[in-house]
Length: 428
Image 1: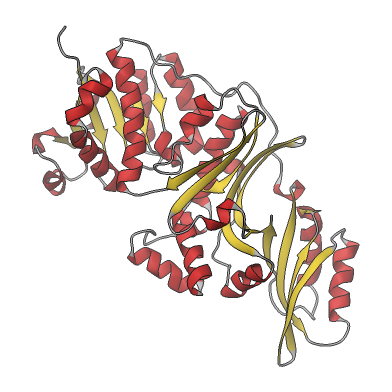
Image 2: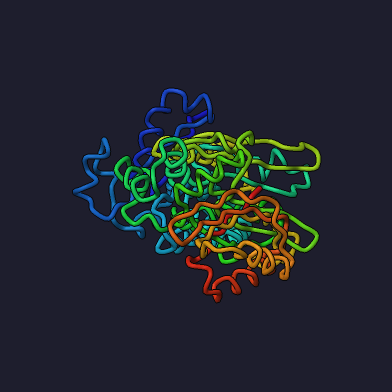
């Protein structure tokens, strides 16, 4: 039989695209043994042909025309690593509609329009694969779709943003404040010049939406995810967490409850002995709880050129095997349920509060009374630090619905004895 050669198009040649291009060539000696075929990157879509020429062995593969790729009948597989909603969304729709398999790392697009694209892939009997959209090189999407599919999954919790984890690690281990830790992350390439998507929890929120959709078989988009970042976390909070045997991490949570699905991203004080507490630097980790498997943890590099390329190429190999065997795509609509999404105010947690107040008799009792009148009880007074005529109060509440805590905070903000905006961090 003639050797089967699969031709693919790579959309984008930035950090991740370059990693994919390198990994294709690194795998060439074993490609046929692994796939039963060979794989060739026939075209690479870039904006600037001249700038990209030094990144490829043969500059003739470069093009700045998507239409050239779409019109090429030899290209059976499209690998999208451009990022952003558009024009990537249009390109992926056209590729799927034309009967091509698509591999993408585009978490923004999948978190917003993943269900629509999945259904389009199913209609055209091709595959839409997006392992690299969540947690870099860590395999989590395929396990949720396949390996763990016999489970009723009720909770996913994890660290899915390497930038914030690096920053919080520096703040915890070296006593750095947020600003210098962020600056170091930028210098090392862990954080973008505009770090908003990372430090405000938006990147992690998109990943939580994707995982929740697959785990709970119900439509969840990024707009459904409550997000809160780490920019207000100070070294005082890191020290307070340590005093009560905890560390602060930016945690993504997707949970199925009797009242619906909780999807949220926020800083959380977790026990120092919890496995997630010791996930350091730019590493990611995800816990999944299923009724049959119990708890499983996925850990590894959450970003970077080659770890992300590894996840993309795993999907590329899967699509290539389907093409080699002459089979149709196996993409299926994951959403056969439509559970309600819980509002943030109905979620239940323990909370750490820090605020500056007047240092005079009766203030702590007044604060406790406000909390009590709103159904919030104090589990632990962490410390009271005096500074001239003020004091900094740090305490931990018992479990409480968020709307009760918010009512108490509204009262605090209107009180003259409260001198600063209360800092609020959830406690596991």
